[in-house]
Image (cartoon, rainbow, N blue to C red; front, side, top):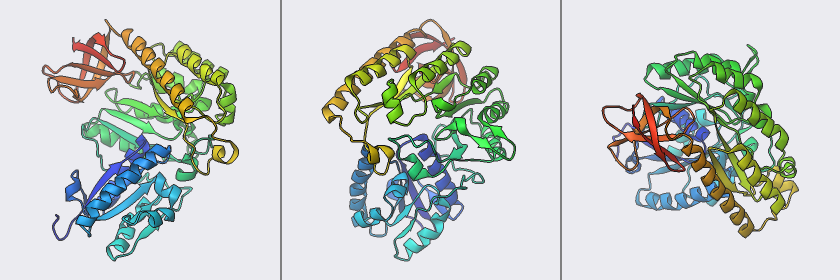
Length: 442
């Protein structure tokens, strides 16, 4: 399987962009300690599953995957399996009891301990570290990039969250909010640009609340400094909380053409009653005022969102309020989910998960159908226009077609001709679907 000296690690990542960024940090820590990363699971001596706890469905996917990996382990008893990330943090030692195939459990703030823990595992022990930190940002670690195109990369600028939205488990699995030293962020961004990367996404559970006290630097200042690295570097960010998206941030985007005209602004519900129960700290009127400010100053901005269907006590009237705010904003796309109660959250402690599953599903279907219409309407407005596309790879359907995204984060497909991955290409849009713009280079 491997030579005598090298242990090979295969990493599977579930969930959000932050988890993918964490997998790159884990890869860096392990390769610095004489392990190697493999893209082939059959070559692995160690399999790490980097997990998500945001919804029950995400955890069930991991449970099913562990059943499959247990079968692998029976064929190869020397294979080691580790659970990393949010699910490791939420379930802790309970996972070791329930999943006999698991050898090591490591939470999001304990990745530096992995090499030491793996030594214990090699000695026949099972190991765990799920201690949360108030300081850990991994700011000094240069991540091993696991993306295939070598064009787009994520940079984690902060960790943790303390918004305590009623439905959300993140504050309990990732700890309190803390920001990275801006100099380490800028150094990482400059290095990535020098290596040929042309698009960076600054990541945080709530990037708007980034703050480095030693230099009194907030997120608008950090975004501006990253954008100034080079005009050929595209800069994105995720995710924004509506309560914190400031006029100053919008004006910073306006000043820098290479900051993408795309803002992900989770609304979750259009009902003030629901927003209050969810502990979202804004109301419908505040949210729509922020949308109006964005559209006034960045008329071509693509706006996307998150929506939860069937939160505790949601009525048909509440649901219709969500449908109406979707129409009013006209989202380009959305991430849409049924409410899934998570243990230990405010909602689990205080509210009853009382919307029947059949009603949740019906409302979610209506939300998805409406968003399909909104996405198609938004994309049709691009027909006849010329958009700048950063080529990221080939189309899923043909090696003769290239695929990339424009500033508004819309997928664009066009004939390959003589263009290459990493090129900026002006494409005239001639057709579209709800998900994709279709055109030809001009």
